[in-house]
Image (cartoon, rainbow, N blue to C red; front, top):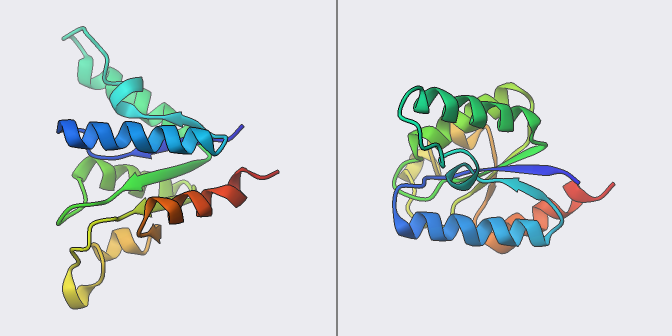
Length: 137
């Protein structure tokens, strides 16, 4: 079973709810999913908390077969952008999900460096359809 690292902003209730919904849909397609808000942010020690979270996320990125990155918003979340860049540098496929219709105008849909590093999906259904052939043996 292949593993998806779900990179996404996780700073509001709405973002966290969407991330959980998306995780469940990806699981339904037959993938394991690492979701940082659930799988690494539940550290309850103050000492070295950031270091522990960073190392868990980095290890999960390295273990993952594919990255799904939620890139909604006027600009891509900085942590998500870092995860996209790291995954791209490792040669891992990145599917970017942008359901938000805001664009950068003549510059493109999102930041040039992000747009050139991902396969852009504009709906959840498109994302799930693009995941299907990746899961097949």
